[in-house]
Length: 227
Image (cartoon, rainbow, N blue to C red; front, side):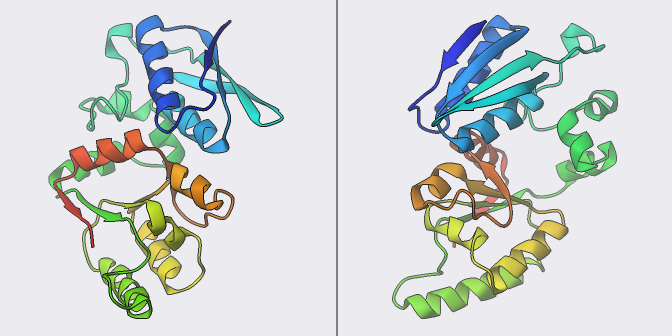
């Protein structure tokens, strides 16, 4: 079995190498070795959306060995479901309905297509405070900012660097984020940042993400707001 050694590689390199292996070699089975749980989550999400599945995860001390297998498909080989990184919108409802990412979330093709008719506004939060000068005031302003976002049509919220603390702390900010998530806003939290602050197991909302997904989302956005 082919083994991709991704130990010590920074985000998003493990996902990029996994993608390259799938695209170039189309293996039926291979293994990826990483040294952090964030990489496990990111690779798992990527392969699940691209015709593969993580059949087994084996932890050996600080290492994780992911056995990845190709999922049998009845689809025409020339009509593979494209990954999020390659194209944003599906044009075929039947293909959409076979994609495990959307089946898991309970989304319908009609819901998905409706996104194309809206402005895709992304909120990029790189701090848990708003502005500079007084931290107490900045924290209060961030509470007001997030509470006000519930009145807007937001596509995604991305938290990185100090902004990941917003997904950790109980309080008004977390309550506002939960309301936004309930409204259908996707919330992504930088996995490298969580690891840096030692908070990977304390995240209370959102999906742990990587820099490849972040850059792709920013590229697809019609508007990016960074307060």
